[in-house]
Length: 178
Image (cartoon, rainbow, N blue to C red):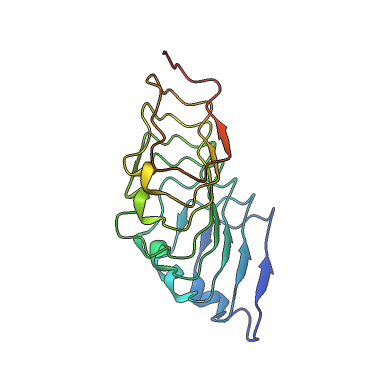
């Protein structure tokens, strides 16, 4: 174990880390983990051992997908996977019951499945991807306040029935017609 202490906050931004092996860290109490601006291409399946994790920042890495185990982090409140090479996200089996902020902007995402499982999400940033339509189930996110889906390839003006708390909406730089 790299760390043998009750560490709760770990920031490893802008290093040369290429993969995450949670057992190496030995940090069962960790609540905050920032690994942004590294060279991470894969996240180890043992990420689910970080059962107390509330904040995870993986932006500006080389991720092409996320392991299924990441979706079982039930205490996660904020997840940032922006500026990677993700092509899809699948929340169908997600247990993100506390997730309030998701940033998946600046990827290559064409499809998001199971988004309705993000029942507490309040801020959803999906700008600068390759989506041609709104994710199915988006209208079920009744807590959503902030939706940024600008700089995609949407062609049809979306309906926002069910998004009764939506206060901020960005649809700029799409291919919308009305």
